[in-house]
Amino acid sequence: MHTPVDLVAREVGASHRAATRAAHLTAARQARRQQRLDRRMTRASSRLAGDDPIR
Image 1 (spheres, rainbow, N blue to C red):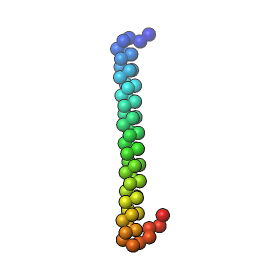
Image 2: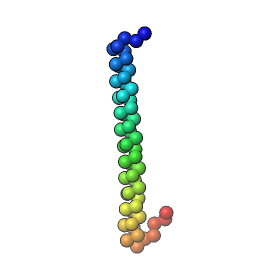
Image 3: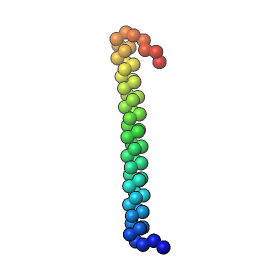
Image 4: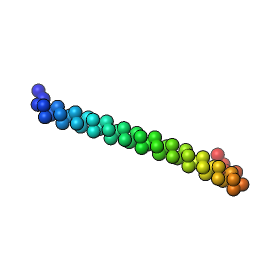
């Protein structure tokens, strides 16, 4: 049998975990997007410079 305090603590813990996970996922997604953009920019700039980058 759980006391109300236990239940509240568990709810808070669960929502905090979910929030943390969501934040991590968002951060990872943004990092991947940034990497893609960076790669595209480097490829474009090196093409402008005249060297053919090895893909």
